[in-house]
Amino acid sequence: MNATKASAIQKHLSKEEAKQILEVEGYKNVVIGAVIHGTVGLLGGDNAAFVIAMGTHPDIYHYSPSGEIQRTFAFDEQLGWFTWVFEEDRKTGGKSKLHICTKKWKADDHELIRTYRRQNNLMAK
Image 1: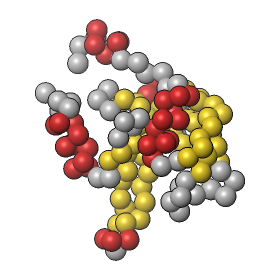
Image 2: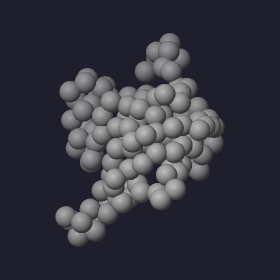
Image 3: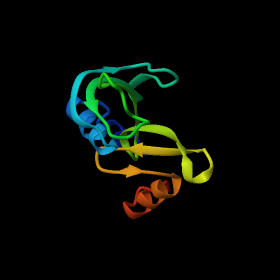
Image 4: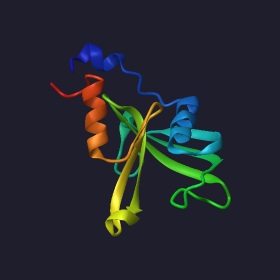
């Protein structure tokens, strides 16, 4: 990707976009308290944000009795802002299953991500 294209990509995660991504992930009644940009764990710079919010989720892997949501978001030039979660897949004997969520879609494994990129002409050239 050339410098002109890269600079045109919006890397600021707004509260509204964070809410949309959490809703795609399955959260309901989401209220964003803060979006903090910068270094988060191993991620850093403009490609990381930490979100503090409240909401509910019916899935036990996301459930919090207090409704608190603390989630790390990352930015990818092809995906945009996204969040992820690993969870135990009971169908495969406890192996981890990856979920990646953007504001428009949720992928449940790497093949779905590759399919999405192919369908939307996002494969690396």
